[in-house]
Length: 137
Image (cartoon, rainbow, N blue to C red):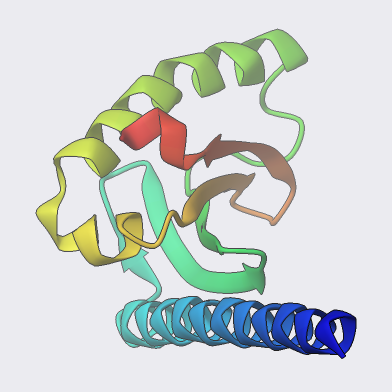
């Protein structure tokens, strides 16, 4: 009888933990869905003379992805070395922006992973900068 009670308590604990994780995951999914909806109402949006925010998406697993186009660069315009240099030049600013942007605090509190995907003006992906919670906390 004591073993059965212990098993029931353990099972109840597992069920409660699973429900809590599901509820937490649902909260993150909802927050990301809301953020994507809000962002996409304003896209496409020219960020500067070289960069356009095309849209945002939430592909799952706590990821919020921003899809950018480099409006003056077509496929084949850059060598692999130039693409790498561009990525290395952009990444620190992206991380600084996330750290210093208070409007992202609700998403940061959910340990969201931010991805910034950059493509040519004809849709060829150049690189993606992935910013994990440990990068902005």
